[in-house]
Length: 563
Image (cartoon, rainbow, N blue to C red; front, top):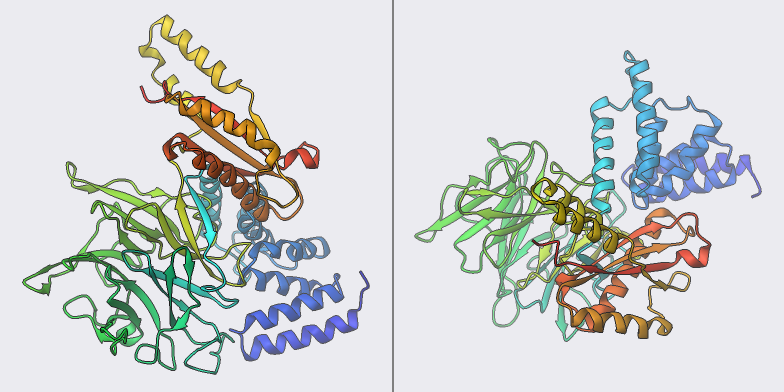
């Protein structure tokens, strides 16, 4: 690459000016810093700023290229350069590399306890990141019960799109966007994005209509965002900046016109504190919402509230099983009335907000320990406002993904199986009870280990960057499906991989899509969801490239696993 230090200086001055005068418009500044770092790869500051702005925007794992240059050129340029490298690798799902850099930074902290410079990251922060990486390694290693599908360009745009809410029959989707098209305000905000407006799309069959601005009765010249849509699709709950953050609502009449929003009655909106999400039952008698009002367990907590004689009673905190010392948000109750979904920064997750689920136990009168929905639903980025459908088989959320159109896009989550545990872990559970077994039973365990772990897997190979099952594999997979269908004790486990082309985050997502593609093939053959499990493992090392683009399919004997 041709180097031009003088051109790099010009770009650097331009980027500094943009960043100083309109710091929120960091996308523009980032692009210019990248140009400066490209023009002169030896310019330490240009590389550092490119890395920093990647960390503050999207594709955060791309920051590592620039921080690695900084570390090679001047290892002492910033005290916390190892921490920044760890963050970049964490976002790229390279958790071993991230842990290496986090631990290196922690050693530097311990050796320089008195250092208090502005480029110091606290030991508490680095310990949190280390714990997140350890959690992520465990969570990402479990088979996935979900697939992720982009809902398409008729809903999503090249601008941030998020907070999808739907009616009960899944024919209306309302969401928030900062797109230019049909925006109420033709000007951009200080961060160079258009103001938030609320948009609506309707589904016929499997196709969503082109999203439209919901109208000026709801959208203003400033920020407007939605929170929840009632099951009948007639009441829309909206976030307002009034009172440091309050909940308003609007109703739709027979002419499909929305009323001017009004503040929610009763004690839900607090004085001087924020309420930023809400869920309301179909009968309108119970709600959940998130607030940072005093008396909680941390920042934002989830609260419940019942209606009595047409009036909302005093809200109550949902308790320490749900709420933590950090933030919880986006509550949603499933149709069964005992399962909730919510996002949290405080429970065991990847980092940022993850989506969790918990059930209420009538006997103990407590919520069960929240369960992380796992990868690919959750990532190192924030996943907030998960909206499951009434049947629990699908859900919608907004996230930054490799296949997105630019910034945050809306995705559909499909539930595709409950096997959710590997053969080795199932056998480990059996081995925990082996002291209760007689010798003959122990022998059976050994036979089970041999039969499950040593069974040869059928290899399904893929073309480069493809997730399609090739016709050459279909006959063998159909034979396996027919065999499993007539033996109810059998299940199928799918483990998929990618070659080393592309970055690790892309390879994880590609391998997961390959796993789900094979899983869908078996679903189409009539195999029940709860007898299937699939997950991608990213790159398969030590293999010839064309042999690493594959999915391994194993038939498992499940009869022992549920005794």
